[in-house]
Length: 86
Image (cartoon, rainbow, N blue to C red; front, side, top):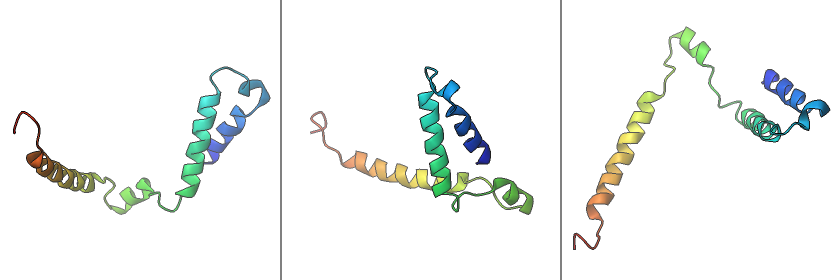
């Protein structure tokens, strides 16, 4: 996060901030830094988890959620009425 702050500081320099097209990256970088600061306790160190032999991927959780959502959407589709099926 220190490197991101350095880039943000660099983009704030007078010689750079007046360049056309720099405003959007500055804004996005500030938003990213704010997000990381607010959520720093929820972020996972994947390198440390990998060295410990713990799972790094959350694909199994995403797969379960996708299946639940898919099943619910299929149920909704079966009960929908439209003018062609009536």
